[in-house]
Length: 227
Image (cartoon, rainbow, N blue to C red; front, side, top):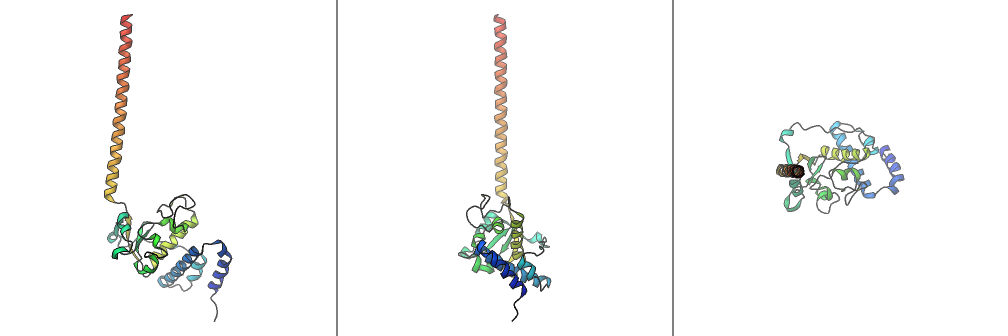
């Protein structure tokens, strides 16, 4: 039986690099790309989709805004944290602010699974760096949603993971990650109070300086009269 060219090329290239690559990350990306190539073949009727995807030379797929975006859920970080698969809850994760239900992949995403670290949070940074514990090379939390300081290649990796969840036939888009409105109100009130306190302190200091100037002026006038 003939061996597919893409497989020979992929194995040949990766074989040289395996000694320098973390095996877990390598296989995670391999199976992710395999799934992406199948999705591209299914969605775009492209039977050759596997070759560029597996070689990392594919054109990116633009994630379009959902037609029914107005019906999409808005999920706060606190709500997302509860979607961790415990006590019958679904398995949700967020990437670049888009929330997906990955319950169908419980083998990988439930507690003890290879990808459980990503569940219940937006760990966009981790999808790019591959770091899933502690801090990364920049000193930032590996499981942060911040994209600050990431390289172009790391940003591409995030988009590849995003494509996986967006085009997977078993994972579904749920909605958008948003800030808790109550927390935003409390934060704004706190900021306004701090600003008001700072303004009051400045006014008080100015009044004290004015009183001091007036006292010094009166003292000088008394000295002049006495002279």
